[in-house]
Length: 136
Image 1: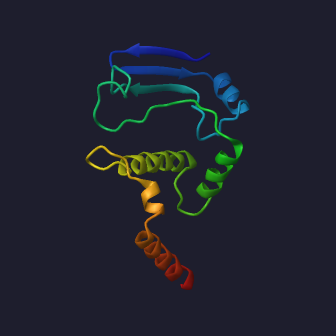
Image 2 (image 1 turned 90 degrees about the vertical axis):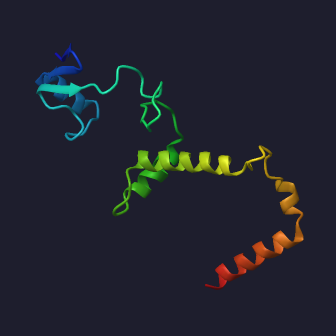
Image 3 (image 1 turned 135 degrees about the vertical axis):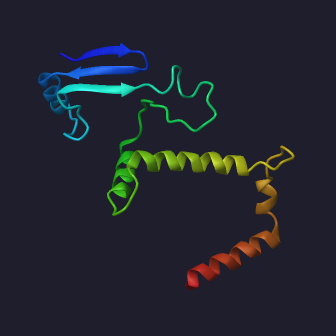
């Protein structure tokens, strides 16, 4: 049976052989499952990392994603030298955030996309860039 003991800023966890085997049966890999024995962890924060800290912090969440989304990122992660799929999903979410932040000018007004679509000079520049890329 797993035993947890808090000692100051550390936490001691004792994993029994039966806990290790159960983790493996439940789908954990031998790398991810905690090995039998005593493990000591140091706590770095007393509060939730997202609360009151300005430095970047990772926060564990549980969420449901479409199977094809997960399969897509796992396929990308299988490529040589690729980041793990969770990191790739996180990076894509950050890109969405940056895109939305960039869509707003310092005045606080959002870009007028309708005006861009109807701007002949803008459309001509886009057409020229696309044509150059297609010729490569």
